Length: 168
Image 1: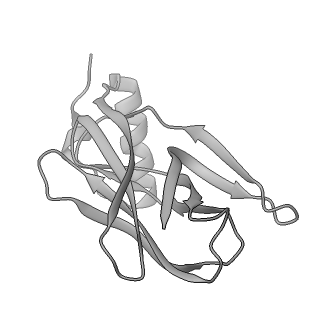
Image 2 (image 1 turned 135 degrees about the vertical axis):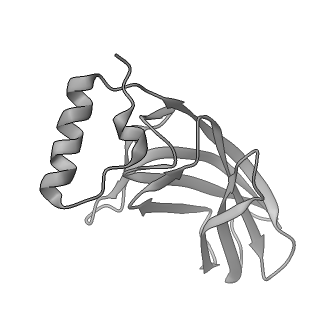
């Protein structure tokens, strides 16, 4: 049996229409910026679509199917950030996988990559496409920094050390 992942998209949100089941991908991500690291970017999501390629036009019986999303940081071991165990139903040619996360951890500037992988019935993991985004460090003006600090104080939250550094 063979399947092909047709796409993997990184975005801020995936919406599913309750009536039609159609997906809307919101704000495709190519670059994220943060004023300091480590940092969190919110929100974060992905969407992927698989296509059955044989034998036949679709599976003739239900098949145990697993999908996982792996984060591939250059300086760390690969990390599974999402995994689902499910069933590929008989007669169905395409399968979608998507997930919305509350946030994405940013360890530092660089190129962040993700890979979708799948397997049938506990077999060997097969690699799907990669998707990546650039993480860059931005600088705040003194006024922006002061406004951010005031908001953190108002909320009773600690002020991170990187917030005291400005680009002025």
